[in-house]
Length: 618
Image 1 (cartoon, rainbow, N blue to C red):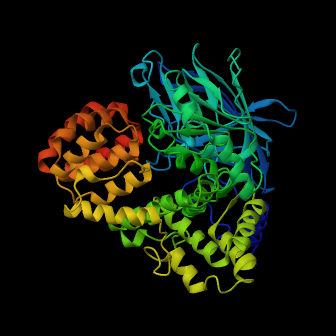
Image 2: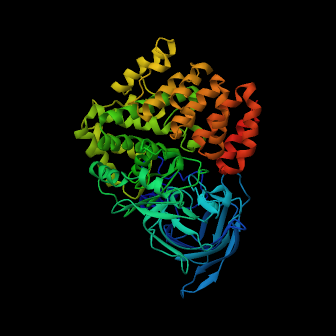
Image 3: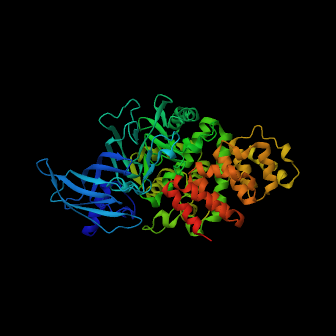
């Protein structure tokens, strides 16, 4: 080996990386984590809602991997840095030189800290920008009470750098502590050990003893109350939402126990959840010890608990074993989607799990119509290509789960379950690559059971377009029966008044509305609405699908309800497709644009960006 190769190999051994692409650093990070890694982070920050900033300092505790290194490179985005210090040989803080590179729209700015020696700690004084990409500052009017402001973070994928100077890559894991000052009357919570009895006197204090990647660094500040759900589970929410949230999430403790029975002990202490205001752009964010949730999952009947099961499943797949870079996104989301179905089956039975799985697979197949063929692989062949530029991130969820389901069905659970648990146990608190998983798969499963999957088929799953023809499709008997009912109703043989929906679950309504979308005209949708009140449904998954079908059919009498939905819901999964459907029709385009003008300020910046792109399309 050449000297450089030897040095890289040694660094990779320390980093815990293996395989042919082991020393390819994350292309979305400026950090030199092959030379020095953050072991611990301390944040001491004050929240200013008037200026929309966090200001204070961060202390990074470092492990130096390269004995010759004297520079620390960090990721930042729009941070105003006032001073940087390092611990000298006498244990005193001394100022050090630093430079910031030119700003890049995607990656932000590299921060280079030059050190006279390999300091054990550096301290960075800074202030975030009001436009920090990870932080949304809500006015009182954007909250339930209308009395106090609210702020929350969304660090995934590379937005942690906009509120803390860090090595912003999932390849680096660190523990952290924090002290946060906030205005009186507001509670601070973080992805750490939250004390529901804390008062915030002297600042809100937190400790995360397990190492996490930067994208799981999270904070929320607002008018919040706490409710205990079980011995190690609880929920935080705005006062007007706390009782509904506690009711909806009552089964959380059972979910934790179900997941443990399958994949080993829950290793994060407590599992709490924070129900955010409606502008939260996604369904949930698996921040360890404090999952962030959209209020759209509150249906009043616990019919959307699969979202909770999904975020909980991340406690094993994603949080415990993490993709080393975003190219390997499917190792987080594909595994988690598979584990979610297993948790649902454990708690609610095989038929419920199979219905959920069939709907998931059908929507994946339907989504392929909108995804370019060259973005349908689970993994980019180019080692320097990121998932965001090569693969469709949404497809990683069902396609990755389908691959694992295929392995399970062929090997049998007696073989596959210990195999998957061994993966989690053997790589706990590590960041991993697809190559590592494939090596483990070959050694621990395929070498012993070669009939399970050939190398050619595995390559097709990882690098091929679409879903392999060999994939087995889930079939729920209830949904098979629903197919016949739907076909009869669409033909007109079964009148709306004769639809027997008394025992339909939310999943059955979702599938029915998916299947009649773009097939039923406005008159038929009006009949459905009159009979079942779908436009007023408290289940947002059902309401969204009805509104989408209404937009495609030109059923405009539903507009007042659809407008109220678009004004009060900020989840991208719902908002973006609805505006897209409305803009496809000339008669709806102007109306949709006027609604968006009124609703835009209520949406998260990520949602605004997504809809803005739709609005400029002709």
